[in-house]
Length: 198
View 1: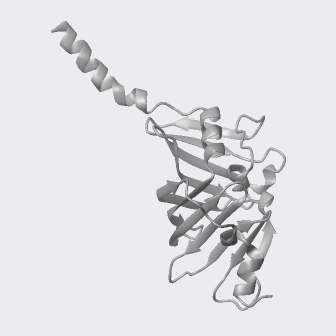
View 2: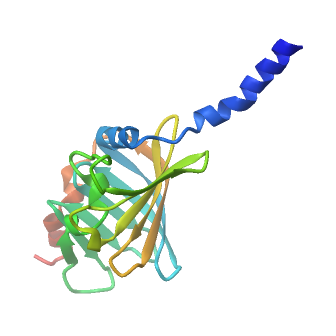
View 3: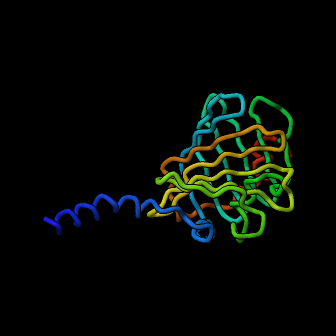
């Protein structure tokens, strides 16, 4: 009976061991191994509205958000720039440097979350690990709060808080990795030409 109780105790305790808090090094290594990925996303905007679409990631420095109807917007990061295309506008996209958004932290060529003053929060609820990070040299640009699951390690969502305190949440679903993604997906100038802006 004693052995049975011990065995049952071990079985009951197993999930807790599986759900250990991920270390900053483990998460950094995961992001550095993540070269390409695609999947669906749900975005909760600062005003409470919800958008959905498809995300394409090609590290370092490249991401593409294709928003589903009725939004139909497009956000592309490539060549160190981020461009926001508004299908309801007949003017060229808004553009700004990638390093002016906290998203640059996970798109960096070499992610190192152990860097001094980069991580401002690191917690676990027993199921997920949440890490809040900022560029220590550009704190005024805001922060990114990332949520990961373990076994295997996977990025599930992030919340970006901008310089005005407004928050945008992106929840990832069915994220697939390791596929071939052409650079044209992340070419801002090509996208501008296709839309008649050049």
